[in-house]
Length: 189
Image (cartoon, rainbow, N blue to C red; front, side):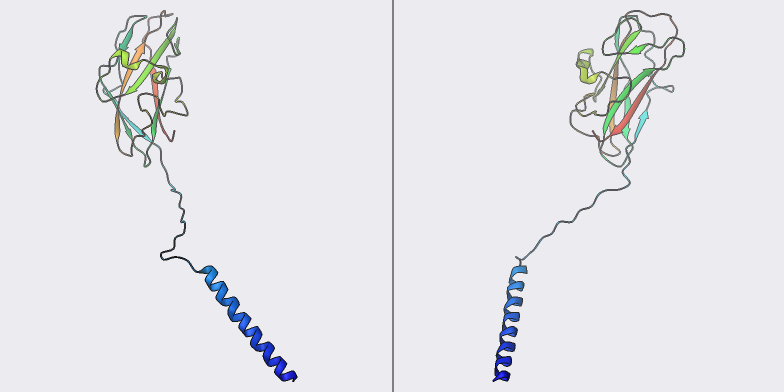
């Protein structure tokens, strides 16, 4: 009797084991085709720009009357020299060692305003209107929506055409030539 009882128990355990495996197999079954998520993060990303000056030394506005506004007559080519789409951010400072002018959002005594606009054709002075086109002393961390770029990044190896507008100071301390240094930064935002 004990042997029969052990045999029944063995058959019952085997049956439960087969039933369990069948349930487990059904729980793992999926549709055809099945899908899974694969992730990857790009490495070796390079933000870079290459500026092609319209003149040997950069750009020369020439002589501009105090208190007047002038628009560049030659375009500046700015190429995305990196391997990722980027916004182009602008900054400008007066590097004149004697009496440097201050860069500000509107001209004043010994204070100038520079504006930049990425646009294919030479813009009119009115096209520069708006604070989003003002070039600060250092390239801002967010260039999206500024300098005529809107929300569209420049593709790798593509070029943009940059135009500048200079609003001269309303008064100056001397009449020496000033050297303004334009910095262009390629960045993600």
